[in-house]
Image (cartoon, rainbow, N blue to C red):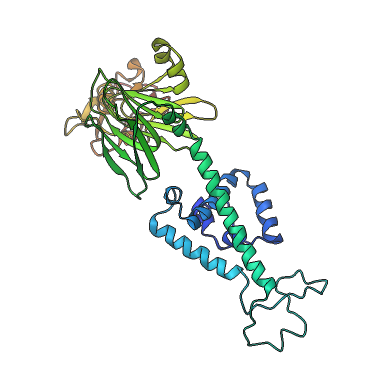
Length: 400
């Protein structure tokens, strides 16, 4: 095998001919190749295993799992590839028979002496031995598929989501998105949830009576109707996101190493569930992370750490006036204040060093980072983003 698999994704592996042949009919050479490759590329073992599970899921028609990676059309195309490869690797009716009496008969393509030539050009019926090999291959495939179903079933049954909802006393309403595009769901208080593919959520039938609790496995955008007397809580794996009224996104798939919460408007507090539930209110507030618009937090599940940052593409807040960010010899201190207000970000700089700096530029069409790039280049400064803060470093500007 000469293919460089270093940069293959899960889907690339799943549709690769050599990978499928190894999955359906492994031999000594393929075992040796993939074992060596996994030793040389230990960071790709997770992708390799996911690709194997994806092939099994496609064969079983487990759409909840396959939709994580594939559209319906892509799944059908992969299924056709699997069957085509399966047809090519399984013994065919006109294949030559191995000679069990010969010492070298272990080679599957070895022709039977005195038998292959007289029958050349004719269809040789499957022998009982060959029928058994086909049956064995089918049994192995069924066992693999059945084992995969059991693993998935047990993992689902023991997931954090299932443990959370199993402890609730009130009946639940559950929504599952098995489609290939996000699904809009309306809650009883007129809040909305945009539930992404391969995701599910639940809420009790008593939702809104005192508190508003949502249980999520997967990814969803929330637009919450403001009600200070009834907090809105999203339980997603090991974290709880608490809001009064805002727009935010939670991504918490069971298989992912990270949980990500992004805020579009308003503010939210994010806690570890064990801290929020087992401690008093004062302590839990200290243990949480406060997020403002255009901020996000990544919770590392293995190390149980919160990493706060600015979202990749910050957006203007609704109150930003039209025609903003056009400057003509405008003090840079004023420009920075306007950017802070417009994006809801915190910019750290020295008033003293920047008090003589001015800017002439049209930044109206630039994203946040574009605005900062142009501003810093114009005054000979630099900036970096650390823990959701923008830090500007400058030597100042000389008065002309």
